[in-house]
Figure 1 (cartoon, rainbow, N blue to C red):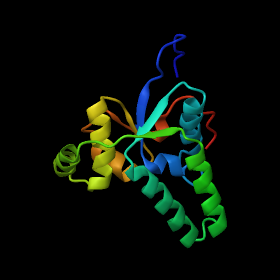
Figure 2 (figure 1 turned 120 degrees about the vertical axis):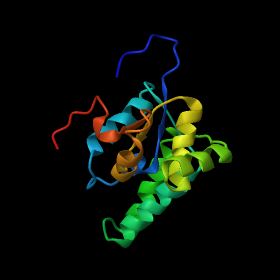
Figure 3 (figure 1 turned 60 degrees about the vertical axis):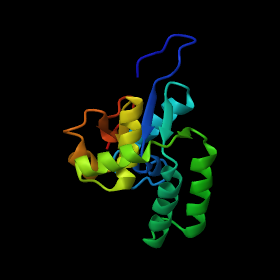
Figure 4 (figure 1 turned 90 degrees about the horizontal axis):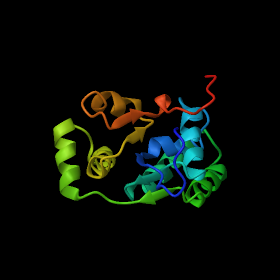
Length: 157
């Protein structure tokens, strides 16, 4: 992360739920990088945004993790409160027509296209922890970035 000048607005980036879930599920790939991204936002070096769908995808990700015994049910509820309590992700919804067009253009689900359409509309990077999404879209859309490539993490994976 490059230092910003005093009084400047931190850069805005879109994060998807797969990145945010890495803040709670430490058995995932690229956890250190996802945490570094979150910490940069908490320190005011970045601003994070996502479509409101992010709320439900994070919730569902923790529910699925609990069902798969990756974490205890009550721990999942605590982790959800923690992630939402960080208030680090600002919600902003893209135009549904842009979501529809991105979904058809890249042959991806509309919920993935919502993150992409938001990034394209804002002209900012989209950081994802979903390797399949990244591999399907990243080569064609330079705004899409794999969270494992996020700089600033002390990575020893």
